[in-house]
Length: 309
Ligand SMILES: Nc1ncnc2c1ncn2[C@@H]1O[C@H](COP(=O)(O)OP(=O)(O)OP(=O)(O)O)[C@@H](O)[C@H]1O
Ligand SMILES: [Mg+2]
Image (cartoon, rainbow, N blue to C red):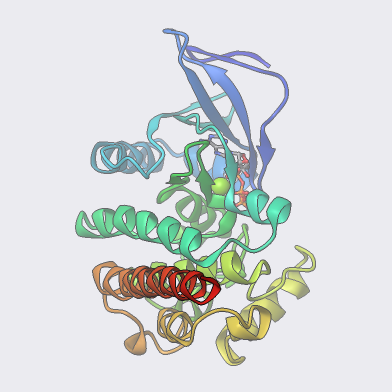
């Protein structure tokens, strides 16, 4: 692809999303970066107004200042327009997305999934405390680095751009936004106000995906009719039970998922900290059970040895 602004960009994208693609590149110091090119024509049109463009880049800049501090949030370095397209320059994250990880390996063991979600909750808690919602939490927006730690991608960006694309900023409210809709909270899917509990719902869906190895609401295709039917399901159908997919899971984790993904947002965890406390409880219980199991095994071995003698 050559040079865009001050960045060298490779020809082959790392991946494609609904409104653009992401390329590997390098900054002038030779550091690896990921460059997202937004191809959506509504976005280009919207940003052709200098006032809106200034506002947009200002918001991205504020987000950079606030969110680049957290180790589990991918850093955004810059945003600019060139060749009539919008570009976002981000930290290049090695590894694979949760979606790729689960597709390759199947369901993730309970304690590994819980540790990943606990790390993401600490990132979300931090962002919420600074007044930022993610609004597009899904397996494709979380990467797992080679050391096993997670990293949240597209903070604020994805839905902001989607909002522009669907024309919400011009009061032309159509329900259907670009991007995946199957991890949207019921209030988001119905166009109502969102808050930190909407991110909690979507993260609950990600926990479900990790433990079940399947999306809670399947996305057969990306066409308009499918998206409308997914939105209908989110707002009207009961959320699936993870233990129907993986009966070995504890009742405790099922109760936590029931709370995180409650359709009525007043029944959800009120904060990431509350979600975190409940999830940590599962790990502590497992540690205790693990300790007792170990003692029991050792005792059994000891008694067997005595009997043999
Ligand atoms: N900062 C990054 N570092 C490394 N790879 C990335 C980075 N950002 C995105 N990717 C890769 O690019 C792919 C496409 O990302 P993109 O955000 O364009 O689409 P998406 O989030 O999967 O979908 P959508 O646009 O529909 O929300 C991702 O699945 C991931 O593999
Ligand atoms: Mg993304």
